[in-house]
Length: 325
Ligand code: 5GP
Ligand code: MN
Image (tube, rainbow, N blue to C red; front, top):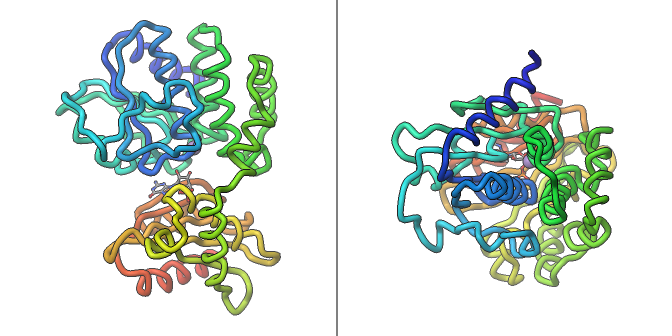
């Protein structure tokens, strides 16, 4: 039996056999993480199961239009009042990515790991890991169909959102025929494709634009022109009135410069840690670079959280990128 079929069957069994699930996605959730959380919630509600959706922090305001988005509990605002024996992790390449939500996993909790990162280390008791999928939302589309459920517009909108954001608007190399076929079916359920593109990929808030301008002012280029990077700190957020989610997308600018192979964004978390986002034009496998720092991701988009100061981390990351060039 094909791996994917076996994993779909085992996932279905996991969902059918248990009740009262915790559904979690990765820290600082992106469009795919939020959409996948909600698609699992929708699936569980169809099965008549109880579930709680949670993230370590708030979900991006921009995603507030999604069905039940307000139901995703923000642990930074309020803790949960119980622990869970059955947990569904979506879009988390490794266990660390669940962040503080793990405090609400009961001891010996059984995990269903649904993800599309090639670096996923299969930390679940049951794993539905499909590295060829463009987004975790694409896997959930498949799981929903496999379980014989009929989609509706709200869940179609969630899945479309995950596909749209993880493919950069159906432009990145992960935009497979399968993605386009799925998008086509989702549009038939009444998804507002152009409206979502406008909201998620085009529109910017003024603080977001100011943050981008400020970040690009400090853009750096290596001598050979192959690596370009920018850094953003809390001071930049304060000065521009921008919020954390406004940093998303900045990393594309250094990467888009002609001749640049790797674009980097260093987000200073505090005096002790930096989050680095990496984007590749195709030659360099940035997932490998990220893994060397304990992170992960995809060949062309990866990230890691690195302990240390910005000044010490930048040269270390540049060195690892150069080794891959
Ligand atoms: P971003 O740079 O947009 O945060 O993430 C790019 C890709 O790398 C995403 O697929 C994301 O899930 C993955 N990624 C980002 N940070 C980490 C990390 O700290 N660990 C792992 N394993 N993957 C990460
Ligand atoms: Mn994803």
